[in-house]
Image 1 (cartoon, one colour):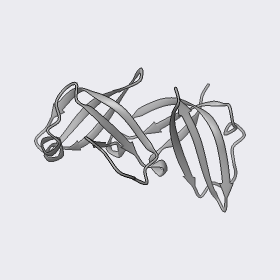
Image 2 (image 1 turned 180 degrees about the vertical axis):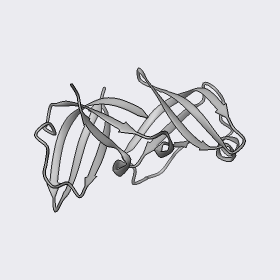
Image 3 (image 1 turned 90 degrees about the vertical axis):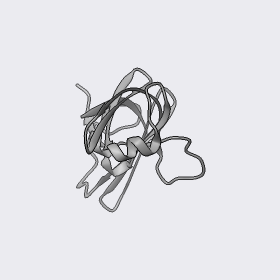
Length: 134
């Protein structure tokens, strides 16, 4: 499981949906909480929280250009590739965090991924779970 600590910048609520805008070192991220009964008291502007997301929810792009609906775009460098027959795990350095992406080995080959490559990690807002920091 990947984990990044962020500061809440804004919280928007409407019809059981909560959109949380956050950032880490000036890099914006968003999380979308669906079917939320109410807004927990710890989801407040200025609080430090953790964004948690599965390795299988991290897509990788090389030379990404144009407009994309994903707001969670993290510029990373590839630090390790564990190739499997069908699936591979790519370890990425984002700021002082190490995050992993589990993608098909076919995609690793298509992207021609190598250590030290600069890539964009992409995570959909609804695939992020928010956790209160202790």
